[in-house]
Image 1 (cartoon, one colour):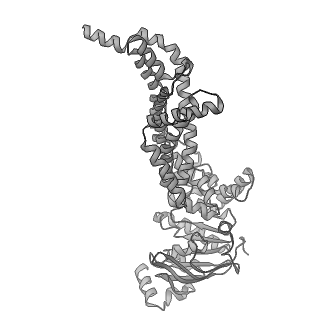
Image 2 (cartoon, rainbow over the protein chains, first blue to last red):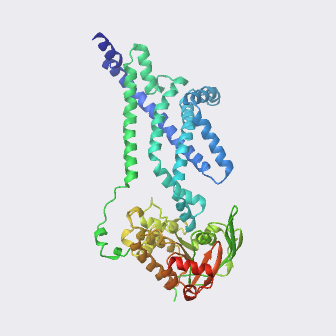
Image 3 (cartoon, one colour):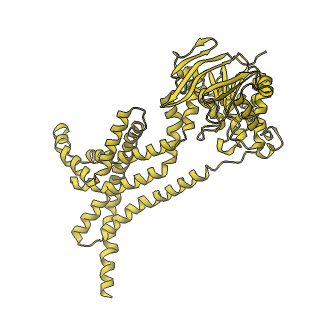
Length: 254
Length: 245
């Protein structure tokens, strides 16, 4: 009985959780979102550039993209954050006078996310049937326009679920910014939970942090399933009034 | 009276190799203004490749291509392809765009027409192929025959001088073939210059002005349909006709 009480108190001390909640909502949530969304958007831009290079007809561009991807996908996030954050931190401080670790953390997360997102986009682009590029070129579009108007939009659609998964990863990886040192208002979800846990000697604030992450990620995983379903079954489209009429009208001729 | 601004097209001594595979071995093909040339032959004979070389989707290794008597090998290939419409076996409509957008895309982006005008022209083209009422549908919601007719409308919207058909009915269910062939016959009758790669011997015989029989990357025999189908001279053509008819 005591042991059970002990466990409940260690993980689900409601008071300890409630105490940390205001900071979580005021600082933790927005800071985590700033990190994840910024790195997500920038990662998509850099990732698209990598994907276009990776599917280019120019061998050197394909190689550059390959090497970048191999490096940033093959090194743990924690190593990249430390190398970028601690390595470039002093340089940035001298140059701009800023000690805010956010830009460098976003930069590090972006470099990493871009490697994965680039691969996601590349697989999407390469999954588009060859006939699509051929049909577009036959109409008179250049290679670049064909990619931009026809191939890439279709490729992106197919990999939306994988892209959302990548964003979920980013939300979680954003916690690594704590390694760079944060002042009170810069703390994100994990750091706030971790600090409170360290001070009180109780893990409940970390559990609260876990709930905050789930609050963000679970809806996203369901969004993935929704998109996935929609992509598989086709978008819900209104039946057109003349669909039935077509059987006897003009549309009847095959 | 031609309703199309069509031109003549000539391929001269066209050669193409993929590595050691000599796909086209000196092809000559002439299609007179407003006439229809069909190209028949067994699979792998180079028919489809010939079309792609003649609109420079694939650059020939050797030879010349003349549109209205003028060599186009030094032109911008993208501009050449705006003058030659192409219809594919697999339709290749853009699935992420509506039927109307499929037809108007090139008008908006290449001809630089304002959106409303491009839309109006797209609807007009769709009307010609009997599918105006499907303008807002997605290609996936259309039957194969309807998709192919949209693909024809998409190519015609650019007001091409020549139309290529690459086995346009081969992927269609048998009951849908007739509608597409009828549309192609209408175009031919309307004075469009057409090169039709086909397995439909009936179409080749009844609609085209000339028939070219290819095998192994060379033109084995060519001439008016009666001659090709009723008195084939070469053993290879006789064998081929015996197999398909």
